[in-house]
Amino acid sequence: MIMTRTIEDIREDFPILSRKIKGKDLVYLDNGATTQKPLQVIRAVEEFYRNENSNIHRGVHTLSQEATTKYEKARELTRDFIGAKNSNEIIFTKGTTDSINLLANSFAKQFLKKGDEVIVSAMEHHSNIVPWQMVCEERGANLKVLPINKKGELLIEELESLISPNTKIIAVNHISNTLGTINPIERIISIAHKHNVKVLIDAAQSIAHTPINVQELDVDFLAFSGHKMFAPTGVGVLYGKEELLNELPPYQGGGDMIKEVTFEKTTYNCLPHKFEAGTPNIVGGIGLGEAIKYIRSVGFETIEHQEKELLEYATQELLTIEGLRIIGTAEHKTSVISFVFDDVHPFDVGTIIDQLGIAVRTGHHCTQPLMQFFEIPGTIRASFAFYNTKEEVDKLVNGVNRALRMLR
Image (cartoon, rainbow, N blue to C red; front, top):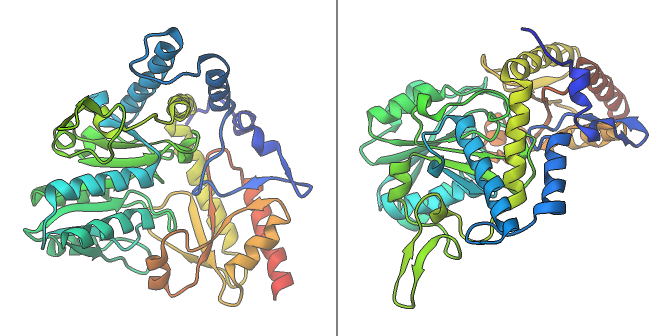
């Protein structure tokens, strides 16, 4: 692999990475929660508010036209980024959670009735469990769970037996935010479609790490967040096949999602506006477009190579720490390592290494059923992006060892 830019050069695009925390160089290893923002995205946000701020759609004045053009350009960039057929299939939302809630509610109204079934996996984030639980309770449907093994891998061979004539949709993540497991979504989609079952893929943890083409996957729905791919918070995407989105009723009512309103009846707008009620996060959408351009400028080849090296190195070095146990040892993993100690609480380790400028996530990571499965209260999670370095891994290892000496 030929890198056109060094990691040191790339790190200069991220101002926060040069910050000091409690007098120490920041070591940011919480990319699974949110990624840092490059100057290109920060400048795009500032430029909009300085020179173009206006509401979009319907406005005839210059600022509105400029803002609308930029916002819709971001939609087209997103369409191209994930290989959707057309931009009408790109619904802008507040994030992955909002996308899944939108889909769960609209899908349930149209397709779920008493006795029907929804399948999720045992490694889902709460945002891909709770919305489905809620609509299943409302409609009298049943939520079924695809189990995992102790390595943190889906038991795909059990999927066929879980599916019944009443199964309407399977909702599963591409990559586990806690385990780092890369799920075989191509196989899941193939099995589901053989039984005429729709599939939602939660791509929140994969969108910034590996290329995705929704047409090649033949996936029905895909959800992801901007803030996990170097874009601002408060913006995300729900992709859906156009014919399916056209069948679904609106999720919310308000401005922009209507064609005509009378007190007797309202007719709804066409895609994608039918699902985008009210003033959207305009600058978030524009920032998402800039983040997509930034990811492409770095290149997935560089991203995957760097993160694979970090995962291998960090795994090797962390396992030198006495008593450390990694939760999630799937054969196919991305750059996430969750680990525990039998004699030390994750929160205590996280608190101490924060004093050294090291940012990791501790807790259940919004995957409480997963914690129950592994019979642990939570984990310490280090999640890497391509701008992280082996030197930062060394600081993490030294920091954890120092914390253990204090706590033990």
